[in-house]
Image 1 (cartoon, rainbow, N blue to C red):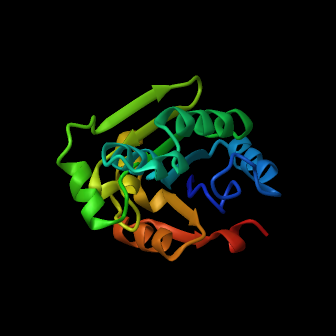
Image 2: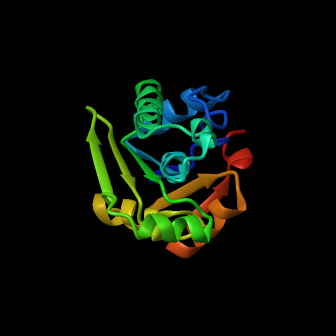
Image 3: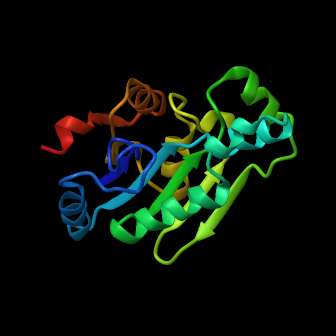
Length: 176
């Protein structure tokens, strides 16, 4: 079985790298049983920071840099047995998403941390509730969708799983 987890409020406290209770033991058990573990998360902070900076808006400081986001993922990967982290950097807001699409931004970034890889993308179809990120995880790792379970806490997570054709379970049901 392959497990794909949302990040904020599923594995860590929102906007932090603080692991929630019972997560480490459960993921270590999953990993010991030769199951693969992936993270699929929306993370639009760096895109918002770029837009607000270009607009001369001082509120940009509220949003993380790409480096800060990658550091957070590295920190989490050092504490949990994760195979790969996948992050959609595109904001959900249609106008802002359109502005990002019209920029010359690198569509994908891959950071190899042994043994974890981090993939970040500005692809519009990656942002949940779209199923593109989950489909990419399956396709790029040779996984059958029928052998995957996506665990998340939000309705958008459930919709993404449905859109990708992957089974879904709510966080509060999975971590009992």
